[in-house]
Length: 244
Image 1 (cartoon, one colour):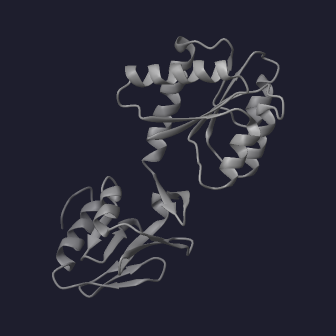
Image 2 (cartoon, rainbow, N blue to C red):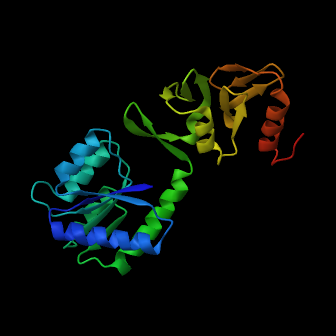
Image 3 (spheres, rainbow, N blue to C red):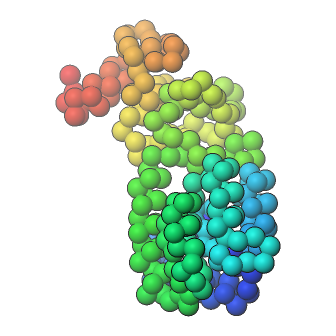
């Protein structure tokens, strides 16, 4: 599911763009888009600043009464927001400015499906590839993007599962260990260790029959019967599935 924010001060333009997005979803059944509408740049920025809304794509007009779309984009970038921005506008005047905020596309109104759909194809394709390397998690009521290669291990402590990152940060998740492993199962580098741990094999520094040494200093003591399966996964991962 991708979150798309529409930002335009004219309701008719919002209606038209939303209709085109719904048409896109009908023609692309695999594209799951959640659409939110904003009638001003300030309204959009305020919701993003609350840290509870993190759109993947913003389709935004440039000419709005309270604040230009270009100005809003500069604010987003200064906040560290790296969402894809597509400007929809009546003039080419700000086309060069769009490069300064790393806009994905600059489309001149009236925008038609034949113009918008290829842009969506490209952006969603790029995002699908990028999202394979990130997890989007709700942590303390905020949506955060966690780089998969930064996850060293996950540990179960009671009803809370903790993600430990390479930079020393840790996040508590109200999910089961099975749910977390399902999220990580598409990445070959992750392996279960007993019922209490998931480890990133990229961060394993040493392994013997008693323990796993992680590169952040953590030692994970191996439960009975877990050494041989983990050893096979470890060497298989580093030797292109050749089990030693």
